Structures are given as structure tokens and as C-alpha cells.
Image (cartoon, rainbow over all chains, first blue to last red; front, side):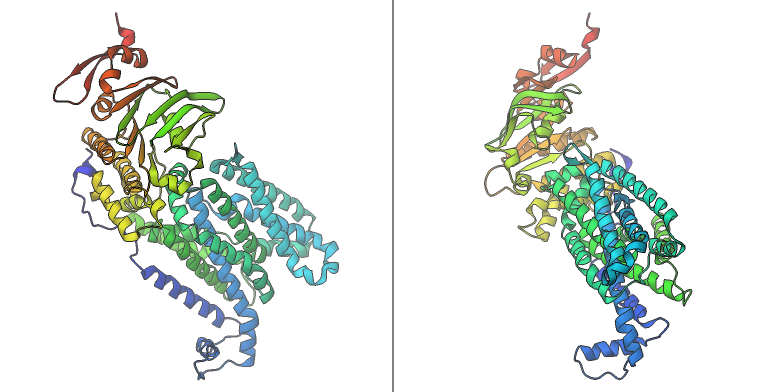
Length: 361
Length: 267
């Protein structure tokens, strides 16, 4: 018997820093509500938060509010900030939840949506659309706005399906092979992008660069409308699999022995990830780090149970992306910083703080 | 009513690793499978659990081909403890045991699952580890927690039929006392009407706890029978290349195998 077994370990000692009961929900939802309110209030046209709450109060039919919005504020709020916030919440939630699910599927906390070739496939599609716009642009008219997102989405699905096809070994989806083929497909896509950038004009280059660093700047009710279905569908598909994902952490064989149809689960998750990340990248560009960092952080705080982790990832991913977006458009106003860089700026210190606390515990 | 392999052949890639062989494990008994390294024991277990499809022959669970069982119903009856586990995420030991209850999630409820998981930890002497993170446990502790998970999976009887427990070297990284604890649990499981098939390396553990022993060599069944009938010096010398003396003691249930040296060093 080893020393640790012989010693009377204090039995009831909980795992350090694991939050109990329902408190994380209250905290995470509260943080998201605050970030949403701040994102609606702050900007070149300031809107007092109390006026926002007041008009919400009125809209819900609770009677007259003391503070009202001015027409200008109302216009900015409804047609600029609200769609941007809605898109940010959905994209942040999908990126983080997809990251959490894929990390469980591959039983590797370093996996992120980009590793399946999804993001780079989307990027290739988008760059292709931007460069080809020279000849097509004037003809497509109303469809022009959706051309880049559409191409990005097709690229995401195409690349993921290709990576999955290459990752099949003997009729089964081999996870190690799948990661390798994802890396290969990504490299191919980046090579294609490199060649296309060479052919691009200066104006197109600017658009490509801005897009590949990620931004919520393109948000409008039209983009929200187009992105809502795939994004919410992905969230729904992923949240349903929480139990099966817990079993996958035990190992694929163990999960199979506990009644999980492992092959079907893999196919479903990969398709859901392609759908969600494809839609996210299509409308907001490549926003890194959310899918990697949020689940890793939450796993340390809440433990690996996906019945908590997936929903908590959705809430926190939304908060992180919105907060980063808020900074991106206020720090250097009136110009905008790339939001992808700011998710890292916000996330890394939190990550290091938690790692350090874990080490000390 | 049994778990039965009929003329099965198991292939990995282009090589046949086990078979053709037939084997049956029945409710109420502990069947030990022994054999030298590479004899096909784990492959046989993979075939019996449905994880590997047989190239020829088939495996039947209670008369119905294993691959025709709906996966959840199969998991309610057939539990497997693998040799090693890849769990690298910080579930607590109790949470790992609760995961074993998942095939039953639609009945009972969380509270009863938790009760079963605690009882299963008790049964494997891991109750004191309940709130420890799995990743911080030693190899032997992990193995016992995994066994608790499989016991939790098979804790309740299905509405019809029996429960089947397959163990792949369950004693491999355990200290002596826990080796006996684990096999005592297997015996208790059989006494309650379950069927146990366990791969073992230690012939004395097999002799002590198994009702029947199957000796596997080069993918084939060499012999099946009671411990006293199977564990003869000749058979052990031929299969394992080991010179032994077999003695019996009236106060022990099975024969006692005393290794004398490798058969190659025989005069």
C-alpha cells in the first residue's frame, strides 16, 4: 500500500477552488448582463444605462419610465449597438461551447475549433470572395453583402468535411488522424490565402487583413438574421450532448461500453462545430482564443462536468467577446482595434491568474 | 442465458489474433481466462464485449447476437473493465463512479445514482477517495475507482435477464490485499446471480476465485475446466514454459501452484 493510501486522507475535503451549487450561474449570468448593458451604453453616442433600462421597463408594459431615450440615442441603440451585441453574444457563446465540446471529443484541452480546418477553410472562402469581388461585385447587387459570409461558410463546411474524410481510418473516425488531417487542411488553406493575397489590390488587402483579425463591426439586423439559425442550432446540438461528452472523457472504448454510439456522436459534433464556427467566422472573421481559453478557464473553476461546463462556456464566451468588442471600439476611438487581439489581451491575464492560484492551492 | 462466443475469429489488421474458439460464461459463475502474453486474451475480451466485430462466428448475449442489442440496453447488462484508462480530466472519484450509472439515467434519479456510486466506492475500498480528483490518484487507486464505476453500471438488475462483468487483468497494479478484495467482489457479484469473466495472470488467484478456468494459447482454447482439473504441471509447462509443483491444501478452495523455474532450464 502506498503512503497516500495508508494516510487517513480527510474524506470530505472538496477539490480546491471548485465552485459549489448554483452560484456560478448567478455570477456568470450577472457578468453577462453587465457587459451587455455596458456595450449598449458606451460609445461615440453615449446612452445612459438607466434610460436603456427605463425603455425596457416601458416596452415590457410596466408603466412610464422617468428617463427616456432621445431619438438619436434610440436610433443608435436599435440599429447599431443592439445587433452588434446580439451577434457578439451568439458568436462568443458558440465559439466557447464548440471549443469545450471539441476538447472533450478529442480528450485534449488544447484543441480549439481552428484545429479541424474549420476556421482556415472559412478564411480561404472569404478571401476568395473578396478578391473575386472585382469582377462580380457590380452585378450581384443586394446579395453582395452576404457574399463574403456565404463563401466563408461554404469554405468552413468544405474544409471540415475534407478533414473528416481524410481522418477516417478503416471506416471509423480516428481522432488522432482527424487532428493531423485538420492541420494539413489548414496549412493548405493558408497557402491558398497567401497566393490570393499576392493577387489582391491594396483595398482588398485592407479588407482581408481586417477580416482575418476579426471584428463585430459588420453587425446589422441582416447579418444577425442570417447568422441566428446556424448559431443557435449549433448551441442546441452541443448542449444536448453534455452527458455523452462526460462519458467520452473516460475514453472512447469506455464510452462505448456505457452505451454511447461513439461514431455517431463524433460525426454529429464535428458537423455542429463546422456549422457554428463556419457561421461565426463568416460574419465576424477569425476571432481566436475564445474557444480555447474560456473552456480551459471554466474547467479549472467548475470541474469537467459538461452539464455545467457547456452552458457556463456559452455565458462566459459571450461575456468575453462582448467585453473585448467594447474595448476594441473605445480604446482607440474613433478607429477600431481588431477584436481577436483583445480577446487575448483580456483572457491571458485571467488565465495566468487562475493557473497561479491553482499552483498555490 | 449466457454470454457465448461461437466459433469466433478475431482479426487485427491482416493477422488473426484469436480463434477459432468457442466459450461461454454463465450467470452465477466466475470464469478465469489465463494464458501467456500475446495469447489473445484481450482480443477475446474485446470480441466478447462487442468492441471488435468477429471476422467469423458471432457473440451472443442471452441468445441474441451482441451487435443487434440496442447500445443502452447492452450497457445495462454488460460491463467491461479495461486494462488501462485514458481519463486525464479532473473528475472526482465519486463523479467517475456516477458516470457508470449513465445507461440507467432515465430511471431512478440523481439521488439514487449517487447512492449506488457511493456503495460501489465502498465495495472497492475507495470511499475515502470520493472527493479526490481522479488525476491525483495512484495507479492502483485509479484501477479500483474504475472498477467501482463498472460495478455501479451493473449495480441494479435489468428487468429481464442477467448481468455480465468482464474484467481485463483487474489486479494488474494492485497490492496483494486489494488483489484479493477485487476478486472477492467478483465472487460476490457471481453469487448475486451475475456472470464474471476475468483475464488473470496469477494462476493462484485464478485457482482460488474461479469456478472454471480457460487456458488460452496462440489464440486457441487449450483447456477449460475446474481449477484442479486444468492446472496440471504438464499443461502449465506446455503453455507457459514454466516448471511448477501443484499442491492442495484442505483449507484452500483451489490448488496451489508453486513455480519452480522456467521449463527451458529443465535437465
